[in-house]
Length: 183
Ligand SMILES: CC(C)(COP(=O)(O)OP(=O)(O)OC[C@H]1O[C@@H](n2cnc3c(N)ncnc32)[C@H](O)[C@@H]1OP(=O)(O)O)[C@@H](O)C(=O)NCCC(=O)NCCS
Image (cartoon, rainbow, N blue to C red; front, side, top):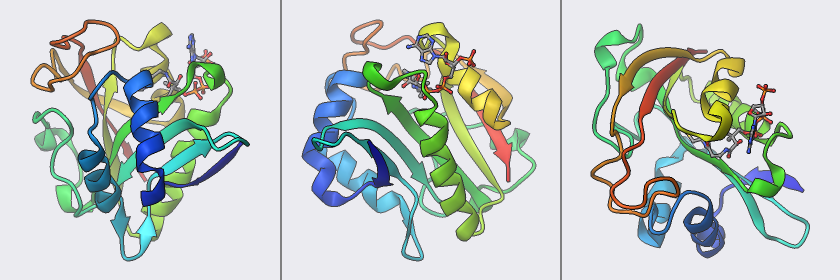
């Protein structure tokens, strides 16, 4: 397995992966193309994929540098509770790993690659919306291990996203924990 930059040629394979891992139609191919664009600042690409030897996508870390985003999938943001301005803040969008490779440290490794890229483009912090109902609380646990602190809780954060949540179906009633890491 290798970690490498998320490239445009990966879109079809990544869509298949996100349909299975996150939920059917959470991302369309067009939105993934947009996500790819939002991942680039000053020629630095901040999003990464985990790829098996046979080319299968096993993990995705979508990450946006400062200036390329102003909200997550949901619209709520507690910018008033951060110690840095939005224009210096990067965003961790989705991180998902195939069931086959969870719990082996690949999530933190993918995230470290994005953090390295964020440092290159001068980010002072990273905000994310962690999935509170993730199995065994693995989302908040891996983020806390990286040093993220909780800022706010958003009930039903993804309710307006028209997709089949792997837990609830449609609509998704999951909770997001807004978290921040200063870098
Ligand atoms: C959350 C996730 C990205 C973390 O990546 P990872 O490579 O598995 O991270 P780690 O190996 O460091 O594991 C983090 C913790 O979660 C636990 N864990 C990970 N996957 C698990 C699973 N499927 N079931 C139970 N526990 C799990 C690990 O044992 C570890 O526990 P510890 O803190 O007590 O050591 C990954 O597990 C995943 O894709 N989960 C499902 C989707 C998800 O929740 N994404 C986040 C959306 S915001």
